[in-house]
Image 1 (cartoon, rainbow, N blue to C red):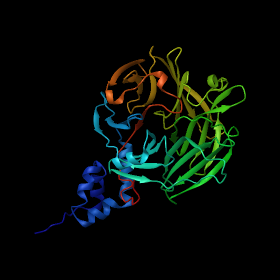
Image 2 (image 1 turned 90 degrees about the vertical axis):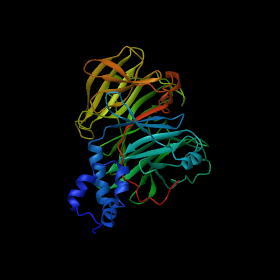
Image 3 (image 1 turned 180 degrees about the vertical axis):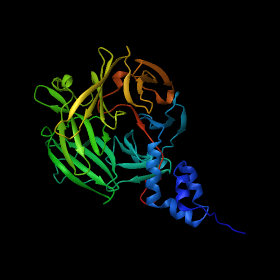
Image 4 (image 1 turned 30 degrees about the vertical axis):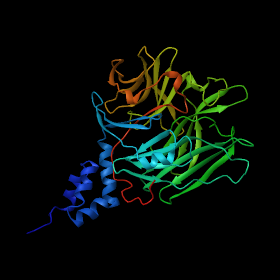
Length: 387
């Protein structure tokens, strides 16, 4: 009796790329040819691209409880399943986890008490522990404070990159910018200098758009500070600064400590407006949300364009765009979906495990809640180095 399944490779790929990861893992045992195909970089890439194009999930993350919830990006944002945080990773981290970015089914993680960086594929239940980045040779610089990470993928070179920003405060203040490349499985130092020469004493979470990582940063002076946006081009490892939209670029901010709550919210997002960088500016004094997009990024005619101003009459913090064009808003102990056309918001998530805390509990560089668009993938299927 015939014990193989005769399906041409092209048809098999068309079928398999539509399946969730758990079913693909089961199908590998059907026969050897399927096993080889479904583990191949070629199929993994096709599957990732398809899943990304038809992604309809949001990943909710509570950084205090190390809790992750994958939810459908549907009308009620129903829970798909809880992502089981690896026990061995939890023991290794020993503290609160920060999920900085998601990309192709991977979550880039770090911790508040350690400098290690992890790439986690929850669908495969695999964690890759990245090599330690370089350590400054100056003995007086021994207390690192990791302010931010960025994580993205370069399709041209099939390369995942992590950008890590650290500041050292012992002896004299200095900053270092390191870049990890999956193609070389190593880090390199791309920039260093005195803190203040580079406008990144305080960094918000990053967003990657078209291979460029963006942060909202504070440029500190003697009497005041100013917010700017720092851009890191992952293709050529270069850094530059751009100004915020005109209403905010000239605003002078009083010097602040690292843990002082912000009076307004500036959040960067990958826009629904044709893959452009978006800026959410929420003014807590007026409860008005302004949405801007950066057009012609990197070109001589680069310009900010205002898209919307919304008044929801509540202290609802903008979190991310949804696939239907609405915005996830964070209220007190719940999440809402804001309709940009009707200027109204409806409850979508009310879950004690996703306790949203109050305004005073959030800081620009350490927000308690995170939401990212997320799709399952087979990336890291063959990883050998695990937590």
